[in-house]
Image (cartoon, rainbow, N blue to C red; front, side, top):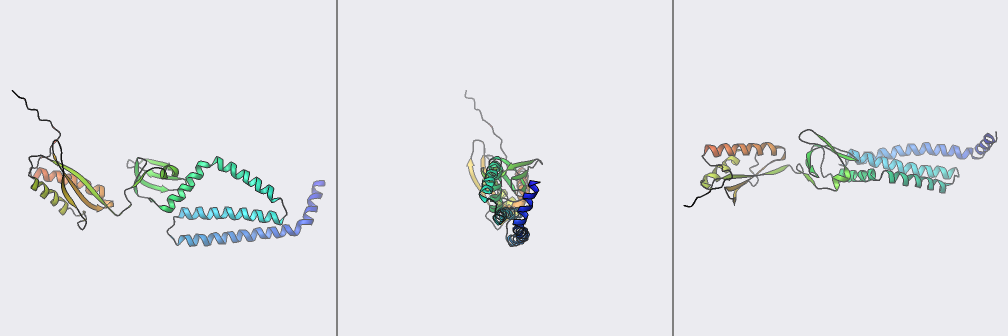
Length: 266
């Protein structure tokens, strides 16, 4: 009975404060939703990723609600110092428990803002090659070319070398072709230049080249450099290798293999 009596006395003394606090909470929630919508609308006009927008809005709501809690506690004349200590203790415990998760979260935001790659890009991260399936706040998901899904923590992504093969709209194919030392070098160059000139998907307005680059032990090496659209890279590379070999056979240009000539002296 004493408890209910004390509770009744508290309500009679603080009823007006309690009503004002409830009104403050309702207005604060309405204002929070309004500001969140404005932030989201402004960020949607930019090129910021949707995941970043959701993260920013969520952080704003958390900070806003903490401020509202302290304001309401002050209105009701609660001991805010004890509240600060309690929240600090909880925050410290959560921070220690989720240290790695927070690190991945921060790195995820950096990835989404800096955009070293995007979904669909062909990349190699820490030696793993594949296409980016999804970029999340905590992880990056890759799908390898043999259709295996790999999930990488964002910290591992940013702390290792990232090679993005899809970063630019065009790429250069570099191929080395070996011919015999007995070959007619002028004919070899003519054949290689013709293959490049006749291929419809090679970008002829860029600087393509055929260059004699090395005299190896068993062959003369030519380097072919040809520019293509990034999306055509793998296909055109395969076609060039096949076409050059067919033309070498047709023109009787010998493609050597590693060999060792042994001469016996009498």
